[in-house]
Length: 131
Image (tube, rainbow, N blue to C red; front, side, top):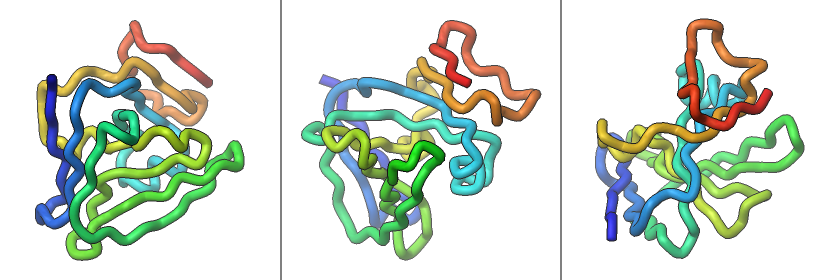
């Protein structure tokens, strides 16, 4: 069974996962752009029972356009987000793909908020696309 370790930049906050993600998505919403400092965010969603966080985290809740809140867990030392909880999906945790520092991580299969996508960004053609 696949095991992966997500980590903040300084290594004090981690999340160990067992198994494959149930969804890998990129989000082009303005909150994700601001939160990551990039044109989109990429995250992998895992069943909550398959994720074991370790270390001290600070949290920051963000309410999205649809009215639901995601609570981001980030390292209080280096500031990197390692995982987040989604109010609308309580049985899952999401982990920013970059926290795995694994260039061979599978490509996203879903692209959301494409109406806010930067014009030069080209999501995978075979992904599900949502405006």
